[in-house]
Length: 238
Image (cartoon, rainbow, N blue to C red; front, side, top):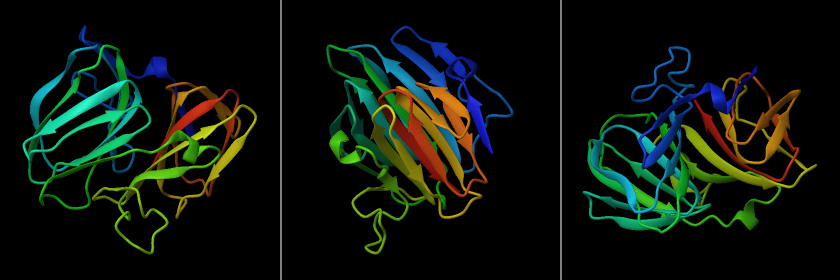
């Protein structure tokens, strides 16, 4: 099953400094058919104006993955962490029993990002934060795991990805027009959610444009063909 969720059909809110689009029910946007996709709870497509951002606010019991598409975002939290994540790179915050953080665009240019929330396997625990550079060249023509619940397992192919505390993976790929890339989940009943950050793609007989969502399940594998040069982000969740 592959369901196309066009960008113009998802929730949105323009706060001036923040132009937000919500693939799933969030804040003032509620669609009972789009509350979650398996353990995937939030996929926000945010555009943050220069010199603005999210002031300090709390989170609890959520794995929060930020994929920066353009510009950069600066993170500060109550654990004492501070870091600047640039376009193409990823940060992860495991909220655990509770953490407060801020996310600001301190740059002179707009920042665009995907913020993805995945429900953890267990509640509580110590909060944590980490960030990593993932050069786009390393993702050319293949999916590379950016964050994974198996990242700390030396026997896992996800070694080197940022760790998250949930049975899920966040992956990225870049593909040239006319090229294809295939992804095979461990089981067909996994919940896959695929968004082309740029470009346009075809999966089966369904075409998706930049920032559209594809909700996929009960597929043994998916083959993504680029109709234009494309940058892909994929979540594979229980």
